[in-house]
Image (cartoon, rainbow, N blue to C red; front, side, top):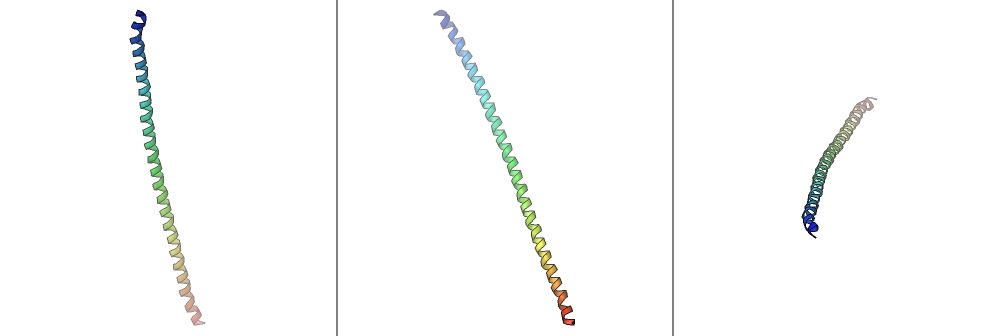
Length: 87
């Protein structure tokens, strides 16, 4: 009985130390997960911004093409009128 009473505090302390180590590991994993999540969100945000810029750039390119087409058609129409008048 005396041995049991002497070993109980030691066992209890060993359990507490084990729990503390487990909590420390879980806390570290939690911190690492939070860091990974923030990093992933930053990467996604940067990718989204880049894609938005590409879309805007493509829109500008299409507008330039349409404007150039209209200018060429207008020049072609204007240049064709005098030749028809002269004939």
